[in-house]
Image (cartoon, rainbow, N blue to C red; front, side, top):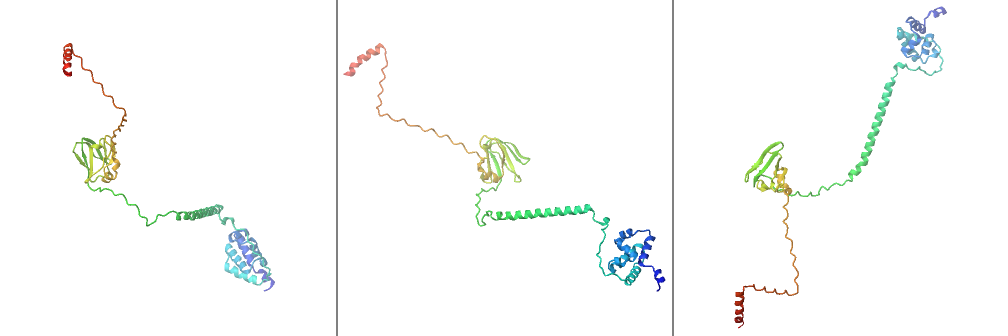
Length: 303
């Protein structure tokens, strides 16, 4: 091939440049779309192989360039390999320097700040949980050292409770007014005559008694007579009429007042002196006739 034919051969760089200009694109437009530095694109267009990186990278740049301007990628790569293989390249290795990434493709600042804030919250939460676990470990010995009752300790036996089986019956020993309720239901309200009885229904849940004369009522639970529900002459209200309550609380009745003991009589000390005899009372004065009779009788006595 003579010099004239060599001049007529169109290089890869010329083809790429002509295709770019035909589309009205600048070299910066190609750099933005292919992410290839502009200096490497310029070296491809001017066939300055010494300014390009290794052949593999250069062929890849050319294929991307061809795809951006509508040329055949494989044809461009084959032609570039042929051109670069026939040229003498310097063995100097140039460091790869890439331009700053496109700002449009970087992560938004708001998202970055949000991720940092979330990371800070997670760190704080983990720190708080760690502190709680440490405090729990410190409190564990105190719990272990607590006094634990012995398993074999015998619980005190409950006090015996009188049998509560049987109906609850109220018997009036004197006329008395009573009010018996079970919650809001009125079971009995009125006067019981002397000797009259009233039995609490078996289905009553919490019957209570109100009366002004508790001493006039005798309450029995089955065959057991319950203590009085209040002191004599004093009104009692809401006294439970359940058998267990009546027999469990014998202190419901007021204790009977103690009778007043007679005051001790202090003995008077006896005097050592003899008690003088009482003087005889004078004879009653009579009239003159009696007096004369008496004077006449005196000698006879003396005789």
